[in-house]
Image (cartoon, rainbow, N blue to C red; front, side, top):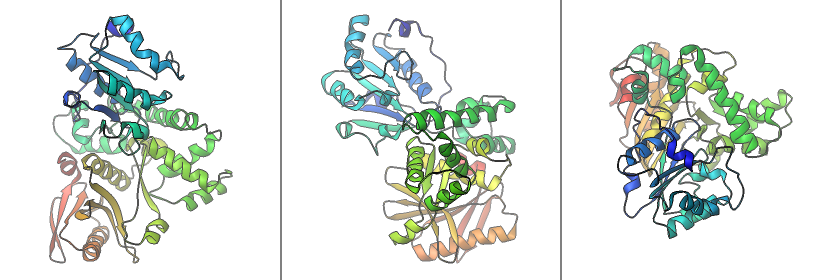
Length: 414
């Protein structure tokens, strides 16, 4: 406790997400900041702490990191926490920030009790979906407000890297190495090393240790397969692992996928189809939380611009999604495809293609043909957009306008 009084707080670069208003809501809510490891959750919280310390003392605003190795992850520790704070400071705090609280036993029941019985504003962070609104424990439903933090958007990337305006070179760097804050600030020769260390930490600490997986090599192999492919199916991955001499069953592959999604590392899209059988039999498309991991996990690092652009577009869409929004991909039985179909409830909002090679007439024709087929089958008057590397303008497809938008402009428009 004494250490917190003396701790010097960093001066973080402002993010587009701000939780200071959330902490002042009446009636109060538990503010839950979620997201992948190292995306800046702690810095976001400390930014809010700095703001509060302009009005309150450090006995009123207390921050605790539960990944500190000195904190024992044992039952009963949380019950002792508030009495220990009161003994150290003479009173309970007005604001209590609890970083990675979900690693502690019975954390949700303790948090509910504190919320119900004490006049303390609470903020928790978590790199597991157990803290998210989708999987929040029953006792916290309706009492928590989730704010998901992602890697840097392109706008934030420019702010962190010191670039005032978008440019082709900054976009290339963003697509290739992503937006993990620490990586953005690293010199170019260190970026891949840091990203690969993040991958090792994800595999060993966030998944293998958390879920007590003994066969860490098979888990690592699944991650490599995912990073080197766009489509994913349990059966295909199982057979690939078998050919690589890994003794892993299909149910284990399914669990690995769930663990990776639970850690916010992976996002998979199902095909949009009214037929459940078609949806389940069609391979999913897989995307990773940050483009940098594609480079870090590739068998041979190459600038696959089409893959990088598509991944960046999906992750930007995820940042923009409202609570009632959904994203799928669409494909018909003739193989025509649309990368992203955005819906709000059951209303079709937009059809989006990611196309890095608009200059190739065959490629552009394929992308426009997919939009035409999807618009005809799905109906409605949804907007149609092709995100390109540099082309801007409009095309006509079946009498409807398709916007051609350069990636830098589309990424900055959210």
